[in-house]
Length: 331
Ligand code: EPU
Image 1 (cartoon, rainbow, N blue to C red):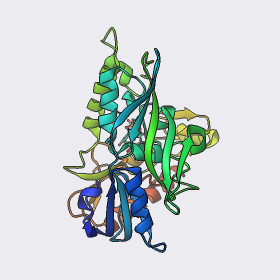
Image 2 (cartoon, rainbow, N blue to C red):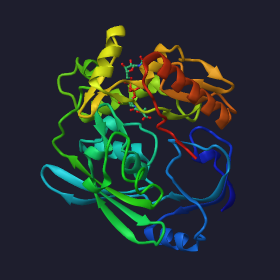
Image 3 (tube, helix red, strand yellow):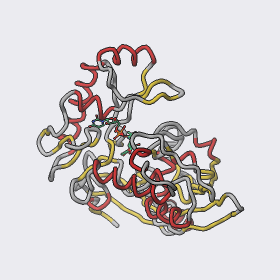
Image 4 (cartoon, rainbow, N blue to C red):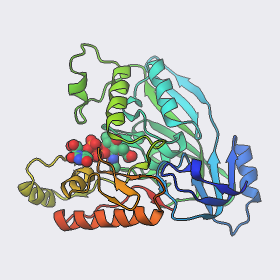
């Protein structure tokens, strides 16, 4: 489709257009579409548009997967491997797993977006990341229409990072992702207050975990249908032990997470400490319940959002000496 409105394809609610917009229901259809796009045209691959900010109209072709379906490809007494279409809504997949009693995805309940993006973005929440359950990623190379399968290790996963965001950015359209789930799930309850919320229960199920996480998310994170947003706007920075200790001296109650690469400090906490919660620039605002989320109060321009983002980064740098960076992709 030509000159296509992207209003329903970005959760920030930017009223922008794409020169051309294509959706595909199968690998074959994707290959046909790619073949027809002129070689010099710029191409953007999108999922549900829940992690991007359009700075203006997109003067190229946008591709969106509508490949759905969940197929069991291997099943044993303990585990199940499922191959899922990249256009499947992420939370519908999580809900399906939880209903079947298969564990592994429940901590990632209610994350906006689609299955394909889970593999690009390595989505994560409450102590679990998509990489913990991803086995294979099937993709098609945009340049030549060739299919390729990436094993988990080849995806170079890190915190909110993958080969599809770095070295191979924009090179592959993901078509299917295969996940491994457990029929005897071990629950991950150590993040934040999940355990305490569930404590009164004797036998905790993955359904209980899903429900608890849905409640936490609904209490903090704005619904994009009501208030445009793209989830966490910034990544949580990882700092050296020395840096962490020097900040902790001044802020003994600062929350933090130890990681193999250093200490992760919640950017939302720092932004909150800088007094940004609920503040706005034009129609762009810092969410009043979670300072890591920037929201569109209605009719915000991308300039207003970027101005707000820059001002926040500057004040966090000034107060804490820490650089924070957007998690959201600017297009
Ligand atoms: N905090 C504040 N004020 C705020 C926000 C947070 O003091 O305004 C404090 C909280 O009290 C808590 C700490 O900061 O002690 C961390 O907050 P929270 O648990 O809400 O998580 P987060 O670090 O802000 C990350 C992910 C979220 C994910 C949650 C839960 C990133 C960039 N964000 O947020 O992911 O849901 O942890 O695991 O890593 C997303 O990526 O879109 C997203 C929502």
